[in-house]
Image (cartoon, rainbow, N blue to C red):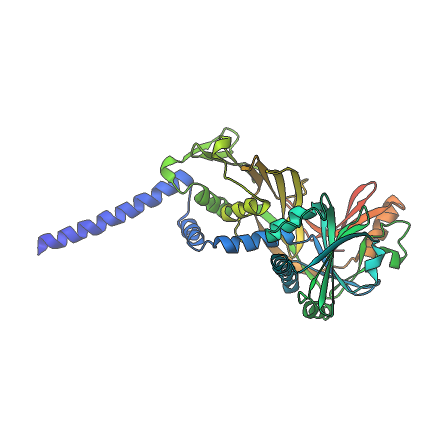
Length: 432
C-alpha cells in the first residue's frame, strides 16, 4: 500500500516536471508567456474553414476605400467600415454578382458616361482609390470569366443603382469617363439605403454644387457636416501578442526551428524552408529560403487566404493597391483601418505587402502593431474649413481629393484631413 502511494506521488511529480520543462523550453526558446500559448492554441483550434476564409478574402478585396449613398447633388451620406451597413452592402454586392454570373442572368455593355450622370441619382458609391482590372476583379469574386466584353478595362469606382426589379452596376473609370454597365435582377439594396438615409451623420456634397469648381476636381465629395460623430484618439504600439501568434502559426514544429538574435537586435526565426525576421522598428519580413518552397498561389484570393491564416487576428482590412504584371505575378497592398478610417504607418501608404511570383508566394512584409484607444471626441473642423485653412496658407491650389486618415507613430492622434493637391499632400488637424 505504502509502495503504491509512493509510486503515485512519483508519477504526479514527474508529470509536473514534464509540464514545467515544456513551459520553460518555450519560455527560453521563444520567450513565450503561458497566456500567449493558450491564446495561440485557441486561435489555431478555432481556425475558420476554407469557405469562410474565401468569403472573408472576397470581402477584403471588394471593400472600398470610401462608401457613400448619393441622395442628390447636394447630399451624399458617408458610410464608414465600422458601421453595420458597410459590411451589409459589400456582402449583398458579392452575393448578388456571384449568383447572377453563376446563373448567367445578366446583361453587359460599355458606354462613355460623365460623372455628372450620377450626381442627381440615388446611387450607392464604392470608391476604391486605385485602378482595378475589371475581368480580374469579377473573376476573383465569382470564379466566372466574363469573356472579352471588357478586356483590358480598369475602374476605380462602382455606382450601384437599384429601382423596381433591377440592379445596375456601373464599373466607372474616372479618368476616361467610361463605364462597363452590368444589369441584373434586384440584389436587395433598397432597405439598406433607407437604413443609411435615416442615419445622417457624415454628410458630403459634390464640389461643384458648393462652388469649388475652380479649385477642386469635379469628382470630389466634400465633407460639409458631422452630426454627433465621435472619433477615438489612437496610439499604436508593437504587438508581442501578434508576433507570438504568427510564430506559432508559421513554425508549429519547434524541433526544426532555430531562433537567432542579430547584432542590431532583430530576431530571425527559420526552419530552413521559411524565415521570419522581426525588426526593431516593429516591421517584419516573411519569405521562403528558396523559390521551390513557396506556397502555391493560384489567385489574389488565395494570397489573401494565406495571409488570413497566418498573420490575421481581428483587424479591419482592405486592399489599397493591386499591381498585376502578368498571370501568376502580382503584389497586394493591404491597409489597416480604425474607426472605419485608414491607419497609415509612417511614410508608407500601406500596412502589409504580399508578393507572388510565378504562381508562388515570395514574400510578405509589413507591420505588426496594436491600436490603443486613448479617448474619444467630436470632430470640430469640417472639410470646408480644412480647405479654407490650406487656401489661407498656400493660396488657390487645385484639390484632387479630401479624406480622413490616421497616422500611426509614437504620439497619439485624432484623424487628420488628408488633402491631395497638385502641389502635394497637405494634412489639417480635425480637432481644434
